[in-house]
Image 1 (cartoon, rainbow, N blue to C red):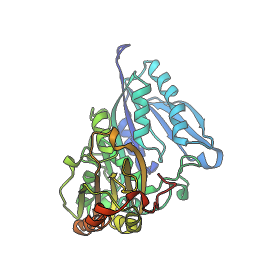
Image 2 (cartoon, rainbow, N blue to C red; image 1 turned 90 degrees about the horizontal axis):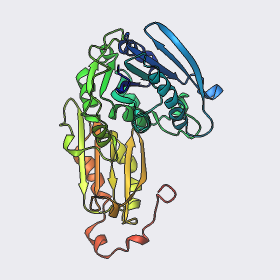
Image 3 (cartoon, rainbow, N blue to C red; image 1 turned 135 degrees about the horizontal axis):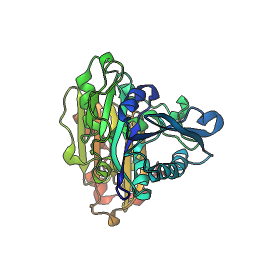
Image 4 (tube, rainbow, N blue to C red; image 1 turned 45 degrees about the vertical axis):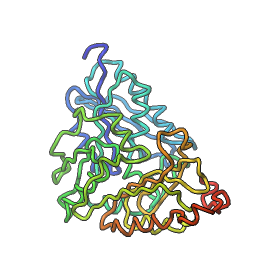
Length: 357
């Protein structure tokens, strides 16, 4: 390794630290250094513990203190100097970072790309439990209820975290696949959630059957384009094996009260949806739409005038056993009618999302 070359980094994410261990072993070779961060003591002691090892064994260990603020933010702030110091030693040609179970790859990678020019993000690998995947994507259980929240402000749910980890991954390792009765369906589901990903199957003891590090697959622009506010519609996968992705569009605004009343029906049968909506009572504002499992959320994205798009609604939704016609009908019913478009004073509509947007 020359003094001026960038050191490739492979990032490992996933909820199950047990299933991740054989994958982590497959990432380690004689030229790699591994940083493992776990959150076992976060709830009791307010710390994230870390250890550094290479092929010779453990090199160092320590803790990051997490206060009452954003745990993910504090992790990133503490982690960057550690990675920088390891790279500066010039002993290894490859860095492997195993993130805590509740960490998403996207904010961490964004900070690495912006803050550590001596590192080149090479591969994002996500380990998925084939037995629990559908359950994890379909519920509304909070990470905090499992003792997995990254700090007090962390109100994410398990479905949201699982979907986001998959959506940003270059490689998805399907573990425990031998215990699932519909392996092709799970493979297809992963490709619907992230057409960029390469699916690798783990054997019965969890060892992956393909490359999981140093693949050169990571493309920052492509990852951001897929995991951003709206999944790229030109990469929507065709239906198959009971998995369906629906692309819904409208150039009419949505009636805020009808949308609020329909939220439960919209997410029924949908494991993941993302998009941008145009609310009639907020005609200048772009509103982010996102759902995972039984939870839906809206957030501000800015003004329509600041974007390249005309005001419109666009939602991409993926589900298992999803009825596209039913979902499209529910969303269509939330739009303003022709008569409302012609004579309604949009600003006078009730705002059920006041305080959220």
